Length: 526
Image (tube, rainbow, N blue to C red; front, side, top):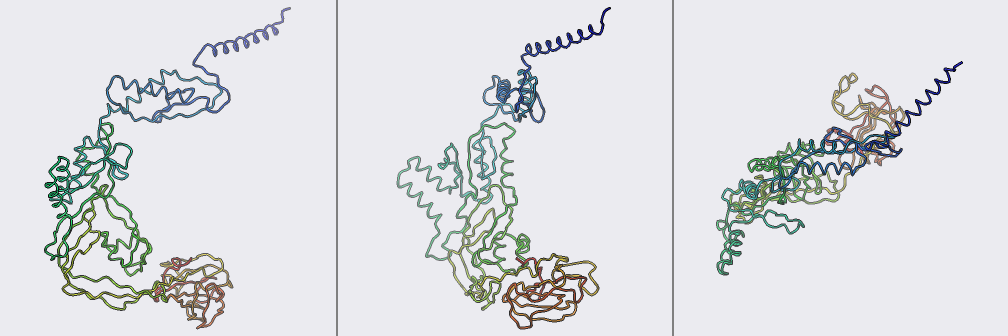
């Protein structure tokens, strides 16, 4: 009898063995199939501009393919070919995988490069203005850019621009130098070996124009443009760029002369006032105050060394120049400050009021892009002397203010509030600090107790007058532990918190007042 079950087992065994043999032989016979071990980055996916184009075994294979693709698009073309594509490699860990045919990778890279290629780079000039750059086709365009930018503030064309070697750079770079035309002519004459007498005459003319006269009448002083230069450092280098990245002269001039917002820091100097600082930067007082949180209004005090933020419009390429001017004016002598070491720094008093004077002057006015940045009087003829303002001011550091309770959190902030308890103001004069009844209340700053008792809606209230002229108030207290006239130290316990007066629950109402006006305590608390 034939056992068909045994035959079936034999057939299945033969099939399995044959299948494994075929798989093994096929893996050996296909060169593009690579068996990988369990290691990191067994192969790399090649992506160009976000699109995957194949797999390579190593990074070097991808680099070789890119080099070959670049050779393909270069061909026999002279010069350079520029193509902006981004190739990325992503390592992958696989037990085995099939790398893409290298020719396919090369063809796909070539196609991507051709899509983005710029036909042959051209020689041009890159102008670097601090961190800004612009590319121009010729050196004449570079000169045109600089001359047209300068020309806006030199209508008589007294100055010119020369491109000279930048000795501070190791690479072959040029820098821009602004010269008087007479000075440039003298240099040219020197280079052409002008006889010494002629050269001396040229140089004498230069110095006569540049240097203001001294010891003479006002009318003898020259007026007009006395000095001009670019503010930013300019570097010019030869480069190769695609046509699309080279600007026309007209576009370049428009771009470098267009205003952009630039943030500067002004360090307050002796004699500075908010008005003079605003005038220096061409701002209104309101604009200056809005730029600086430390300024509350036009009466805010500033001290030497304070830093103010100034945001001004400025082009990429700025022109600084000086004009010598002859004019007649009412003038104010500089304010005289007398320091008082026994006063706090927030106190000052006018000892003598100012009176205007009248004078004729020759002055050099400094400008940046047409905006006045300061005036230096060269010579003056005083018709009526000005009487200076004399201000006595304190130098003693201001006292500090500390949190007036042990712990707690703000339950109601300073300023406008809606739906307060009946009888309470809709404008909160201080802050409410939520603490349990009986919490210690301490003096925020050392001072003399001026109020210690019941005060209407405040309930039990303590007021302390401080040496800097400020006053702190502590309201809704459950118990008062100081008396009027008592001097208390910073951090000394003065009361216990509570819920007296017009109050919705246990808390401390805390105020800081200056000249009788309440200010947000959080501005002053350390």
